[in-house]
Image (cartoon, rainbow, N blue to C red):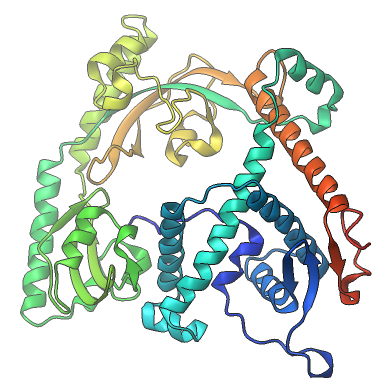
Length: 452
């Protein structure tokens, strides 16, 4: 199934909103107190304790002094953003608010469970979170504004950066591969027909009284849910393929769907409960099983093509244009490219495990043996048969001006932006009214000037 979407963390200190702010008790019966004033902004001890909870929850090792300094820095940016009257995108705030609430409900188990967990109604949570998201947006926009003041670096700037940076500190470029492929798909008609017959028999058995959960445990090919009788647990409909969520949301509790096709395979769905745009359902996933005859036929064709290419009877590029069934690479003579960036160089981790295993011992110009892999082109069952030619291998190396100028340009620009941001922080520490409570005055802060 499509995995739960992950939304970017805005700022560590802002993420405390996903943990309950229970009252903390301290020495002498103290419930809470202001531990820092920075300009017109106050930081409470309870906020630091909440940050501590969040950092521990995320597996991040930060002490209270580090957390306080992080929060102080963010207040500097927030204050300047307000002084500069930076605009606020309320559409973005509402979108992020809905994303955050959806994630919380998905993790906790629905709206009622979320209200019980935070001991607050949803409308109150939204009010609190809306404010924190607005502050986070302003903080990030201010950082970007400062970073954008860094003028575009010239080639000479990049050369100076390269010369003054020790080799050990230069970015390491992992081994990269330039590859071409010829891909053949199995004939899916018979395999799909068999899957549909299987699922129709399951549906008939369920309607005649057998438990959906029992059949899901025995036959579903989604191992994560099969062990729970096919149950997916309460999640937003956006977490699933549209065809799946549309079919599920059309069902009443207990009702069983017709066969639903997604890029994962074919499904039966049984609704358990719905809550707004969230639902909990069971499903049985069955994927097409292609015959050995399909595999033998594809391997025979690919082996013949490899022989012809090796004998110089045809080039790999021409063979790919004529015979490959993969639409995204066929038009480019089989040249594989990242579908998101268009880059034609792949690192090991960017390749499918089956693809890397096939080419890991090959030299430039060599062609793999035929092998079975998976593809991302919506081919039901995802099975594809391939041969891959290694066109070029660039060994792992520290970045160089000659070969990796754009990488060095990005790093140098990022470094210049970070320097500009750090300069802003130091200047604002010196010019802003800051008062730290004695409880934190002995902290070993990373930057000087907080305690005045």
